Amino acid sequence: MKPRLLDLYCCAGGAARGYAEAGFEVIGVDIEPRPRYPYRFVQADALEYLGIFDRSRFAASFDAVHASPPCQDKCALTVGTNRSRGWGGEHVDLVGPTRKALDRLGLPYVIEQPNGKAPVRKDITLCGELFGLGVIRHRNFELGGWTMPRPAHRAHRGRVRGWRHGVYHDGPYVAAYGAGGGKASVAEMQQAMGIDWTDVREELTEAIPPAFTRYIGGQLMAHLMAAAVAQ
Image (tube, rainbow, N blue to C red; front, side, top):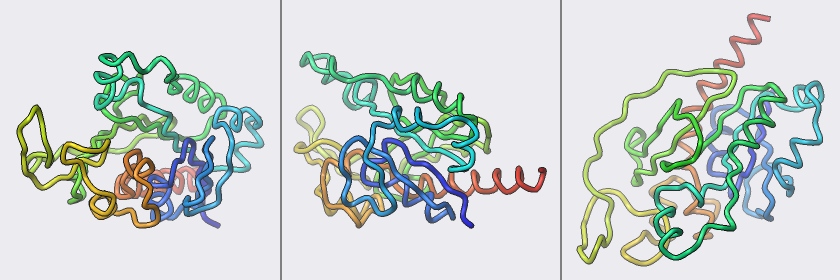
């Protein structure tokens, strides 16, 4: 049987695809309907879903957890715009409550956040250049209950293509966020991140490239196998 991983705040399943390719059975949870999610899906509030489990029942149902709480309030790409336009009051920081719930349940977990001010430990930081992708897409990962080696950050090959302060810059990476200003088209985002099962811009702009979680998932799988042998 494959180890089972719970994918919280799953959106369209960028993280899920990577974990599945690493050998996990993945179950996604999101408060919004996600008809393009490529695996078993539960529409629910993530924290409420965690709240239905006690430790023994949770451990019997899952082997590990990935969580990508909403990040608009603290993301480096949006926090300045939110402040200048008076936005962001409706965004709630869910990192702390998610961590608290996962610590209570006791399984190894991963919490993902983009670069910014989110209160997450940067145990692992991944970049598209590490995997030869057409996006930079820096992402930070906090590891709970397990560890893995921290990879070295590779130098970028150039700039992100698009307009900045009235000046157009070319480069080997596309801007897979927002719209206008030379941002990537849907097809460009799909190709750059390795995602072909959704063509919804909003889902693509929030997605984690599967290569990121395939890399982490391989290390997590090794941790679970070592723990099983030790028992």
